Length: 558
Image (cartoon, rainbow, N blue to C red):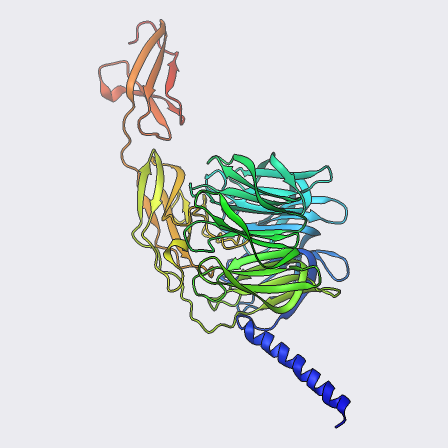
């Protein structure tokens, strides 16, 4: 064998060894499986849109033929997906989110982006089988956008935060859910950003959803007033520019939400001080631009790991960072097929209780991608225990639901998340449904804002019956079954107190009273005799009204 052949064979063996080592060191995931329609400038969302118990997929973006797409892929139950089905007008430079916005126990869809002619903001209402009615356009359309669904005013339904470019400038808007899936808005606030990333979470641990906004060279936090209005912005850390990505999650397992920020060739972590302020930026790993990041426990050891895609200034990347348990990460470990202009999502697509990965984007100087990576770890991850020890308490006239600490085989108790479903009719959870959606960044999952809390404060009057149940969610997004339905039973209301009657004319009196029960309504009776059985009903008096004018009396009535 001549020297040239020897050198060539040695080179080939070395390359094969490198790929073998690369495969060995990212042993969490199997090889990439390309499927469906590959896209870039994309946004993707996982959720069980047909309520059959597995995670389906929605994608938006630009395909290899430069067409704009909005497609759904139905999970076959084993982590593979059916052929894509078009939902509505395709978009790119987009952001999409799944959530039950009309509280009918299925996941609806919000879509923003550019369709080639106009900027869009659309909602699609789930028909219950994974098909959608829409688009229903509303508000102000944007592209270069980021959206997030969350109950910012704590009334039980999902509100909407939207950033992006409208053509007339950068925006930051909130839309308040009317309870039926329609929205009031836009309500502009703060400083608008474009090509941005946002995340909702209770960063100051006061029981409501605050907001982090990145983009246009900024990094801002907005603190919720508990009514859906925000104080801010408060600029902090190192701002990032176009096509950044952020995610909230408790990376150091101390019971509060920390922050990861990627963009402008940076990768930073910010450690929460417990009050919504942060220590940072603490730079680590390889900085990226045109990126997407997601937190999740990919090795099922109870700590939130990190997946990062993007452009590092030389080439595209797909990296994992393994959490050491204290908020520090080991990595990057590069694996799979590198992409930028990307969107990623973690979820258990093959129902084996570990986190798999969906990746879209563009290879450096190459084609668009839509790939799935199955998690192949051999660790058994069992669902958390079903919550127990439930109780319902009247707190200042409103129901509060409480339960005991839940135990999980891997996840520390202080980062177990919870989802509450409740309503005012048995078996019908029309205020907050049983569906679990995966918010932006995904580690901040469930609808109990305070991550160490085991209670949920409602705005349901304690004078009403309320029916509820709760499930627990571990760090790999595996949920327990819901507990059995609980009934919050109202006690007999306290009668009105401090009643006063003032005669204003010969046939008119004004009646005033003090509400001690915070009841939903009163019934007023009139009795003009000494016979208590002859009282006549006058009217039903609505909530928060504590006076009444009676003008049908005559001069001879008392």
